[in-house]
Picture 1 (tube, one colour):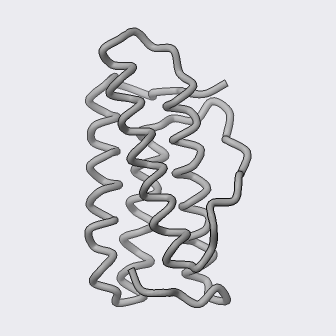
Picture 2 (cartoon, one colour):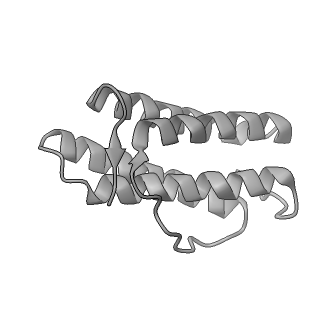
Length: 123
């Protein structure tokens, strides 16, 4: 992804999305659902963290720790992140970010497949 000016509405939305992805990662890593779904969820968390890192890199920021959202619905949060990324990247006309949008949308689909209905995770 190309560097994005930190002063725009789009950059604010990207920071919020990065924080949401961080919460997904934290929730996925700290959840104690039964295996093998636990390992699938941990992989989803790792990929959410990597997507967060890519967004922050595009913003020219480091991965600053944020507080995880308690009781987060992982699948819904990933769907929200994918939707926000799709809207923001359309505004930026940044073709390099299409892959990021698809990565996050695929994570949402995988999280939904783990458990039907809300997948509440976290402390």
